[in-house]
Length: 494
Image (tube, rainbow, N blue to C red):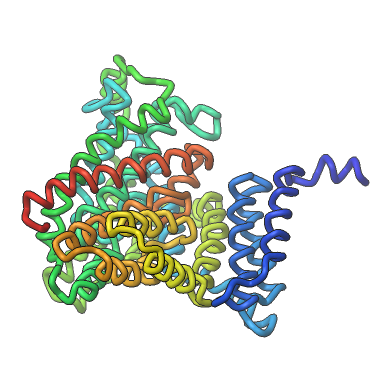
C-alpha cells in the first residue's frame, strides 16, 4: 500500500510539507487585534493556498478544490455548514468568471474554422521577419482596441489572445508538444502585458476605471475630475513609452528560441495562398467577432442611449450561442475545451477567497493599520506617498479582481495621501495611483480576468509569470512615475 500511494498520489512531498507548516504556523499565531479568529483563519487558508500553488504541490485546480473544501468544512466564513458551502461556491455565479470561460470557448472557434490561422499568417506576412516585430504587432492591436473595449478580459483574452495562439501555432509553437519556447511564451507574455498598459490609458479600457474617476473626485473634493479626454491625455505619453519598451523587456527576460524568421514572410504568403478565399465558417466567425466587438465597445449605448448598454458576459453568451446555432462550434467542442473548465475551478476559488477576505474585514483591517502606521511614524510626505503607492500596488497579490481591490482600498489610500502630501503635489500622487490601479494587473496569473485565459493556454509557467510580472510592474511604475510625472508637469497638473 505504501509503494502504491508513493507512486499514485500526485502531490510533491516537500512542497506539501512546507505548505502544511505555513498553515499550522499561521493558525498558531494569536489573532491580531481588529480581526475575528475566523477572519484570521480565512486569511491563513488564502495565504496557504497561494503558497501551495506557487510551490506546485499539486495541480492548481486540485489546490483550489482543497481551499473550497477547507472553507466549507471549517466554516470560517459562516456559522453553519450550509452557509459555509454556499460561501465556498458563491463565486461560480460571478459574471466575470463566466466571461473568462466563454471567451476561452469562443477562441476555440478561431482555431477550428481556420480564421485564426489566416489572421496569424497575415500578421506574419506583415511583421514576421523577426519575432520581436510580431510582438509589437500584438501590442499595437491591443492599443487600437483599448479605447472601444470596456472589458479588458474581452479585449486581451477574447480578441487578441486567439490571434496570438494562431501565430504561435503557425511556427509549431505548442505547449502540448513542448515547443512553447519557440515563439509562444514570448508572444503570450506580450499579449498579456500589453493589456494592463492599455487599461491604464483610457477610461473606457477596463471596467473599474470609471470607479477610479469617481473615487479620485471624492478624495479631492472634485478638484481633480478626470474626464475621458483628460485621462487619455495624461496617460498618453507614459502609456506609449510603456508599450514601446515592454516587448523589448520581455524579449530580454523570456527570449524566444526563434528570433530571426527570414523565411516567415514568404512562408506566410504561401500558407495564405493554400488557404484560398475565405470560407463560410470563417465569415460566420468574423461576423460574430465584429458583433462582439461592437457590443463590448458599447456602441449601441453610444448611439441609442444607456438603456441599450449590455453586460460583457451577456454579450459573450450571445456570441457563443450564435457559434453553436450556426454549427461553427458543437457542444462536443465546448465540452472538450478543458482549459476553460479548469480555469472556472481555480479562478473561481481565488475570487471567492478574495471576496470573503473583503467581506469579513481583513482588507479594511489591513488598510486601517497601514494608515495608522504612516500617521504615527512621522515619516516625510515623500516616503509616505511612496509607501502608499507600493503597498496599494503590491497588495494586489491578495486580490483576484481589480474592481474588488479598488473598491476596498483606493479611497482609504487616497484619503491618507490627501492628509499627508502638500497640496501642490496631490495631483501627482493621484495620477500615479490611477496608473497603479491598472499596473497591478501585471503581478499574478489571477490578477484580472485576462490573466487566467492566457496563463491557462499553457505557454507560460507560473514561475515565469510571477517573475516577469514583478519586473514589469516595477518598470511600468517607474515609467508612469518619471515620464508621466514630467509629462503631467508640462500639462500643468502639479
